[in-house]
Image (tube, rainbow, N blue to C red; front, side, top):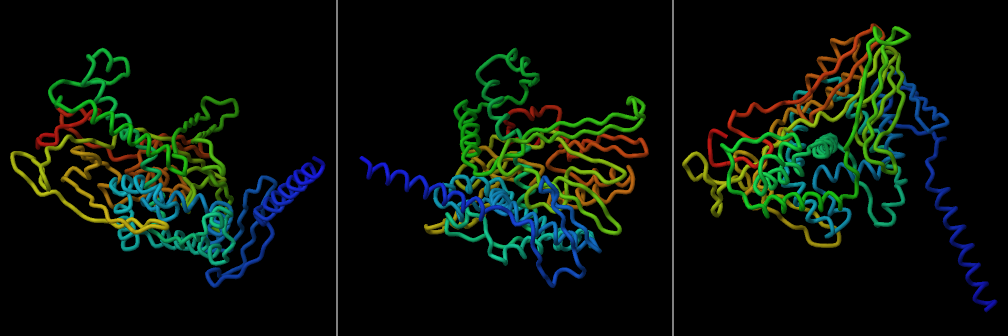
Length: 451
């Protein structure tokens, strides 16, 4: 008995020591010196008592490199997971358990959209935004080159790939997916409409007409909603859901100055969804909250103005009930060919798989005969990077409004206040112009040109 007790004590002590060593070794090193050919002048980074980095640089490019480096040093695993979710590339890290998630995420088109957005950005994006984004990515990759990876990679026996511009848009794609409620809502609303009378719809403040009601199996609608919720629950990253904000004119405050508050209360996660940083150069100073893997802050303030975001929750997705036979679909009295492409999903410790992506002119077939039109993937000129860059570099409300106008998806409420007493609230999104007969809250008849 004493021998057994002694063994137990030894094991407990060993576990305690091992845990202590792990915690100590996994802590971020806040005292370091690095050299890089990507930096032209000395950069100083000071971490305050809350571990927020304050970056002092001689120019914007050097500051963005430093931001990318410290961001990766504390959030690399999170950054990697979110870009993989946006690109449907989780199986490469986690194996066969994530295949169905990747199939679904690839079908939605975020990876394809990221490729198109990258091409558009690199060919036509503003030079200063491209330079800042690339400098940030160089900083991220400089940390990766050092090989000091988070413990998760050690446990999986894996290493992170370097980041590129396309990864910025994969991250933005996951943000757009997180904000899109129609994936879950529309199938359920359609099921309620098909199985109950209109009084139930009135209770949830949805008004639907009967002129486009089409026969959709209640099982189809429920299956889609169940599929989406099940796959979302299996995702290894939290979704960006929930936020609020308000801004009060100085005419309504005791001090006579604008009061601004932005509470982006997204789901709890460890580490936090947000990464705070203070950036200072001779021409620029801002304090921002960054999303993992995105170089420009959606929320922040300078010495003269503040800006923030909340979810617009606009309906930028339509789901269509298609008539499909083989590789053709029926539209406007004619049988048309489905657009079929193939994508390869790399699977850890298993063979790669090739999946077909089938589309009508509305968008991809996400299940059986239901297709999806989504504003986010329909327009390759996604200017989120330019918009967020502009908010932190704005000189006045005119500049901020111009930046807000660049956003088309995901739909965002942009809040603004400045030291001149100006306040603003812009709803930034592309809003589909639908026909009067279209009930966009439920499945739409995809065979009719009028829809």
